[in-house]
Image (cartoon, rainbow, N blue to C red):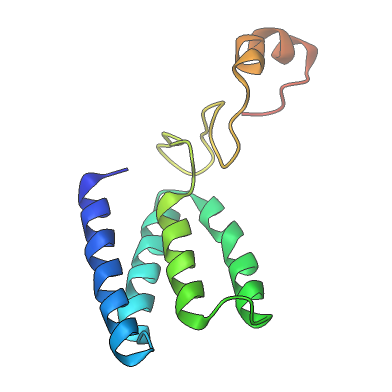
Length: 124
């Protein structure tokens, strides 16, 4: 992960924690813009996988398992972290074998030629 992103997130978390300790609330103007900026950046780079965690986080908030600020922070942190592997895409749709949320085991990557000949690998 980019060191500047880590520093930005650390400062953001400290400011949010200070607001939460002082007022027991975290304002939307402090959480939503960063979440939207990170989501826009990820989607601009064809990393649509970041959207998979949002319905789960929303459901946890809706069921009163998470508080509002907790849900917004968790969504932002998930948006920063996903996907696990960098796709290395030049445009949407071009993917490496180990791209996405789940990595493909190296044994399958080594046997890719055999799998492609058998038609079991799928389209790239």
